[in-house]
Length: 141
Image (cartoon, rainbow, N blue to C red; front, side, top):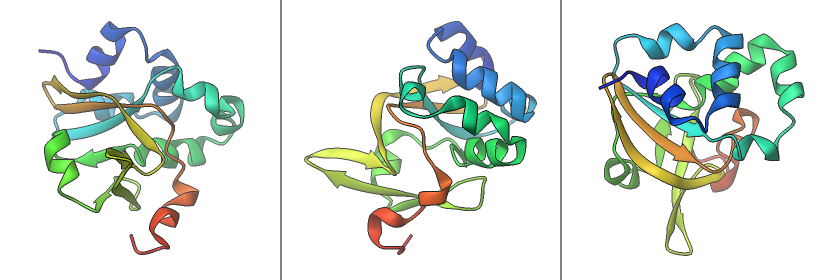
């Protein structure tokens, strides 16, 4: 089994995410011992944001990417049992059900529970934006 970074590379639909992780200096962290849960926006998800603006400020980029990482390997069933998840950025992702589907912050699952040596990958259809952390539930998270 491969680690999170090598799994993303093998998949082929995470080129933007991999490039941003490299730019932010977070690649080694996700190569390392975990366990981590990575909420991984696929390349299509990055078409909904201005990547060049996100990538321009390395500190903001690192914070944004850390907002996609949760300590521990959390499968989709475990995530569904929570109303929030604390990320490595120090902010919480909101977890709720909308229209019968689980929504994590502003994203829904594309694929779930991809196993890696050092955790799990949850593929999502949107990029989490930490500046909006908690707004979905009126700041309760």
